[in-house]
Length: 431
DNA sequence: TCTGGGGTCCTAGGACCC
DNA sequence: TCTGGGGTCCTAGGACCC
Image 1 (spheres, rainbow, N blue to C red):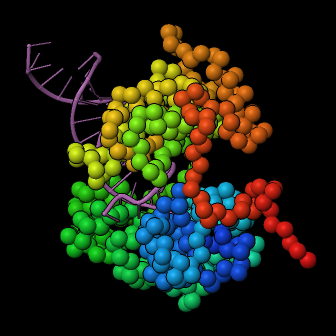
Image 2 (image 1 turned 45 degrees about the horizontal axis):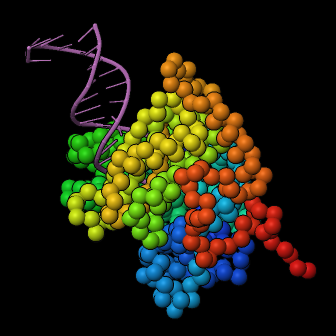
Image 3 (image 1 turned 135 degrees about the vertical axis):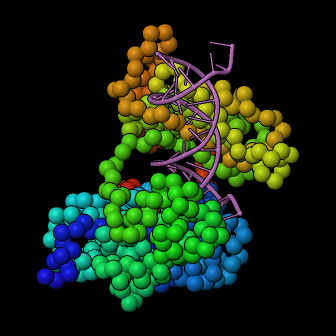
């Protein structure tokens, strides 16, 4: 019996990852930029969040603030884009749809990544199967991907990293299907590149002379891992040893919804901040209604200017539990503003703020309360507002606490059109 | 090194119960 | 009234992910 026939009885995972996803999305509609350096900026054009290989090679660092590299970008002739989430989200959905043609078992892990599972399928040659995926996504969407196969999720992450690193040699596909390959891969993987080991744990691991994924799974390190990482660490260890303990996950309703923003300038007055907080709260409420749910708690988040505050503390979270579950703009906004009144310090410099709604439940699971209830008119009013906004496509109805004159639009000086989601911006082909 | 705007899971400790 | 042992629920905070 050949090895592959034998493997067929075991579970096999794949991790599919789009290469430099945002940059690749921009190139789909501007193919003249293929081979050219591109960077994508975060909201408000704040810092760099995606780079094409060419931009990486030119030494543009990930996360660099835009103003610090502005001259360099210009000098090196790098194309700059504001982030266009409507476009990326839509292309992401299309990639996932294509992957579903290869197995019904797809877990969308992030906007540019998915785990696939092939349980119960007879696939003779995974490398070839991965190549088919890659070619189809390339042909139908012009998005390049890499695929890593292995018996566990954590190992498929490792395999993907190898595929990405050695794209010419591997054709962007790597399969870990033998003990030798697994050990070799683990020895090759630096500890900081292991899925689940972040900045802080890397430091601790290195002090313990754990430098690679292979060191991590050595028996004499188990006690240390358990102490530092708890069950999460042990699970990771099993996964790297080839024992699958992380399964495919079903999409769940979100447990939190957060709207937070850094401010381009500073905010120092209560009124300004009240307007912001009220708007964040409104957007949270809208998102709740969109997924037909309510929240039981509201968190207000404030961040002072770290360098200008006299005290050590600069992050502030306040939680208020609602007397009844709600998704009303009015209720959530007034609770958020009430909290703001309590904690806002006039004269301090604020850099960032946000509203997070927590303890989310389905709309129809609302508990009946004997004493305190939301004004039933809210629901109808919200319905009217949502319908109006849907029709006009603009947020014209606002709460009194929001500033009618002021529209807080993001700074997006390099935005590409919404090619795939807005009829007015569809590409026109000239013949 | 926390860059920006989202998220998740786990654990320790306090409140409270019998 | 803090005395034993055991349990649950909740929250804050720490770690991570993209």
